[in-house]
Amino acid sequence: MPFEYLREIAEASLPLTVEEEASIDKLRVLRAADLVTVLLPHPHSERQFARVLAITPRGRQVLATQCDALGADMMLTRAS
Figure 1 (cartoon, one colour):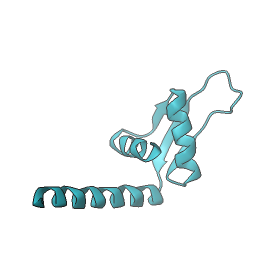
Figure 2 (spheres, helix red, strand yellow):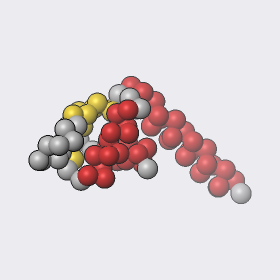
Figure 3 (cartoon, helix red, strand yellow):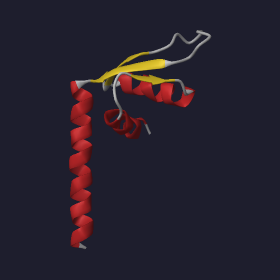
Figure 4 (cartoon, one colour):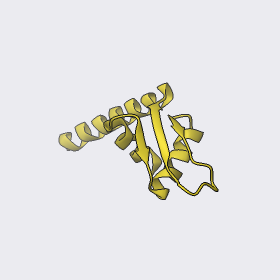
């Protein structure tokens, strides 16, 4: 899922170069959602790679929301 990939990007050093086609497709989704700033390859380019430049403020907000949700889930699990 692209949001899990967003978490991986957040843990990486930026800028990040990506060459795997499946990951580039995830980056297209994340960019369309305005979660990352990324340079994407032209679809007909011989060499396919993308360069992630930054996580947008909206992307950071999504990450923070996910962390809050995971923390709440963990507390509920512990209370059971």
